[in-house]
Image (tube, rainbow, N blue to C red):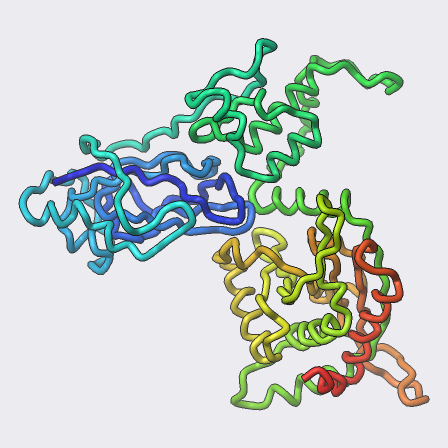
Amino acid sequence: MTEVREFTLPDLGEGLTEAVIVQWLVEVGEVVAVDQPVVEVETAKAMVEVPCPYGGVVTARFGEAGAEVPVGAPLVTVAVGAVPDELGGNGTGGGPAVVPQPPAPSGPEAERAATADSGSGNVLVGYGTSESTGRRRRILPAGPEAPAARPAAPALATADGPSRGAQGDNARATAVISPLVRRIAREHGLDLRAIRGTGRDGLILRTDVESAIRTLGERQPATAGVPAGPARPTGTAPAPVPGEERIPLKGLRGAAAEKFSRSRREIPDATCWVDADATELLAARAAMNVPGAPKVSLLALLARICTAALARYPELNATIDTAAQEIVRLPAVHLGFAAQTDRGLVVPVVRDAQERTVEQLSAEMVRLTEAARAGKLSPAELSHGTFTLNNYGVFGVDGSTPILNHPEAAMLGVGRIAAKPWVHEGELAVRQVVQLSFTFDHRVCDGGTAGGFLRQVADCVERPALLLRSL
């Protein structure tokens, strides 16, 4: 028995409400196995390959590369039972094959293929691997890609009140699942009930709120007392400059821009710095990296120094609950570290860093860095950090005053290590010197605590044996 099932974009976790299609991994008419990735998408946090829980023949794809797809929107339809079980059903057969005109099977093989998805082992938030939720309908012939059916541009409701959606005004009043969307609407004084959502079942997306903000701005008169600029028709963009390039602030870059802006708006940060003699730290690393032993990175040593200093100054491993007006001190150190990739700056997170040895920290950082450069980090590996280590020395610079990784309260910056004249044991010598900077949220501590933390880090850099105290 053949059945066409629709696979929609699942909830990818961390409150993400939409994703951008990067590339399709299957073609229409291609046989897919259970849990085979069918599309690669980019969320605001990572690149993700989305596996399909059904096995069969792909009958349609929805959306082109570059299209933004909300959670719950259809991705593909799969004809379950249109191929023998060993090809599309159990996920253990050979590689996918192209079937231009899939036959309509009958008999035991078709019955087995019709229930092939029951063995799926891949689970993302929002869909599972047990009972099928597909709808029975006729099989669609393999053909051109099906266009994604989406409403047109979002619009504000009329003065008579918000338009009634498919589920009524009461359902639309709560058709928002993203805290970011709610916050943007609140900051601009928008009533979400007066916005038509373009997501599935009227879900209000960030793009809907931003469109409403633009529409509202076009309707409002210019602020009194502000000199008027050159007149141009209302609602039109400035004339493009010849040769200019416009890069959309969306996906990973857009999420980073939003986070940086929010950090600057909300956090009263301050920075202090100190120079330190890292000669002994480099010698300790060289002694650790004996032939045959796992390599220990300098970043891992600095991470271990950070966890030791945070154990002494736990008030810096914290965040601010602005709603409750409370400082929240966190029990575990989830250490983020900045990694530059072709897609931009990302901050992978080492979970429970305080419980790891230098060797374990080094191995985990290498794994996360490789995954980041390949675009394979999961949203969970990029979220819920409590403290960030930023090694900008790899860019050949000495110092920096970075923006805090909201909602964290502190960040240690490390500049390049360079040979410089230094007074060592009363004599002028050439030593390996590094500048350390510490940026902190002034709401969680005063300068004395911040200075004490930075001095502890610098002392461990200059005398690594001090770490033995915390072992």
